[in-house]
Image 1: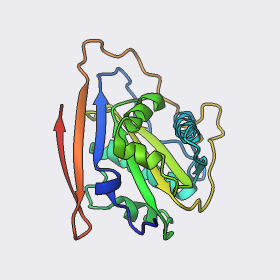
Image 2: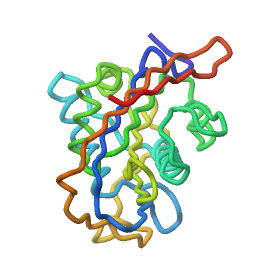
Image 3: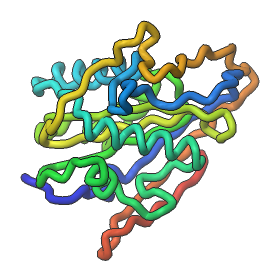
Length: 224
């Protein structure tokens, strides 16, 4: 089945976030090359491996890193961290399909988006997506051939860490890992977290979404 738009209500519909108080004190944007193009830092490469291992265990082909999808993922994660929101639709009402098109990904193919917040590590965020049926479905969709992954951090927000994975059925332009020793080609060092406050109580945010006839999205969130 070929999809010509991103059916978020059916393919996604669920956003999850878990957070605890952390003593990380610096703002960290997603990694990129010196010329501003997308590259995957160590955390993004770990997520990339986790998703491809997950697919391989079910007989699916691996995904490849895509520059335009990575640029869109970077845009999304940084925007969520900067604007302190967690939603597939931006405060300016930009949908995932519109976002990836703005970064040059205008192919007539299946696309999808996973987002999460609150977990620093790729492993913990991957577990959130794996345990959510709609997010799991995207990671295991056999129509997808490409992915872009980005993580951003802002201590001034409720959830601190913001992750995005953009999926597509066409690679477009390939991307790779960042080349700097610290995995951060833009010169922004990776954050070194301090100890997590043991007294912090994890909070889980559940958002159910529905695509409306006019193409917009209605999201209802609650803490559990």
